[in-house]
Image (cartoon, rainbow, N blue to C red; front, side):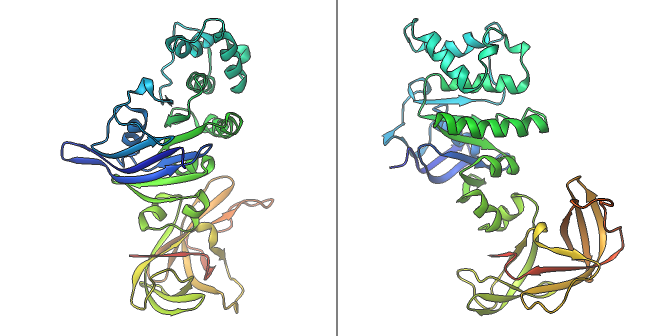
Amino acid sequence: MALLEIRDVVKTFGDFTAVNHVSLAVEAGEFFTLLGPSGCGKTTLLRMLAGFEQPDSGEILLDGKNMAGVPPEKRPVHTVFQSYALFPHMTVAQNIAFPLKMAGVASAEIPKRVDEVLEDVRLQQFARRYPHELSGGQRQRVAIARALVNRPRLLLLDEPLSALDAKLREQMQIELINLQKEVGITFVYVTHDQGEALALSHRIAVMSQGQVEQLDAPETIYSYPKSRFVADFIGQCNLLDATITEVQPGRMKVEIEGVGTAEALPVAGAQVGGKGTLTLRPEKIKLGATLPQGNADEVHFKGRVHDCLYLGDVTIYIVELDNGTLVETMLPNSGSGKAKFFDDNDLVELAWRFDAGHFVLA
């Protein structure tokens, strides 16, 4: 049995449906992420897990027990908020000890429990400091330590890294992964940051308009999106409208609007005449002034460099095909010397394998 089960949960605010018949399960020890744009329902769902909101219908079960009517303080669940909500007049140790005092833990037991969790988050030397004396990353760890000290069955994290700068956020992502492995507590994490979700999660539920669009492992969501929304929302992706013209075992042919014929892996439900979108990641596309011909597994198109964006490790090239369609590709800047290989208006050739993209039916 899953640690957490959400069964057909609905939550409305007036005429607005924030969560629309959502069902999912989270396993014990899992790092599970709710991902989606602002207003998709992910934070409302998290607040229902915490007990701050009650569902209009459906069930939320933790360890098989229905949480209906159970107040937040009675649930084996703790929440880490974006603001951290640390008490400024208390030291790190006092902040962490506060939930234990509120729970009536014996005074003699509290220092031991605080020391244990300080070791978990590697903040033993900061026990006597106040929040204003800590960096953003250290305050983040104190907030997590305070949430962990009561040994909850479930830790909820509501965009806890969004206030940090990019470099510190990356460091904290690594720390969160390691911390979750060390303490073994189930994390349910809310974010709108696709890269963060891909880096941290065992599984991701991508949400849109109050519903789960896809629930899968990060690599599955990235490589095999189930909808045009998921393909567009997760990372960079070329979305090429196409019609199926032939279906054979192992591959099918599609006519990309205004571009030409390409091949793709067949998908369930594919039929001649079916419309959809060929989703193609930029890193799957070869780019060159000329490319070797004769590989039956590749499709080739000619174009002209429309624009480029140097990002340090890679350069993004926007290529305009003969019909005006823009295709995004990238080249790694791994070689020595010149990092930028093409300039605006350079004639180039694109190629990709038939199995590089993923076709999504309309």
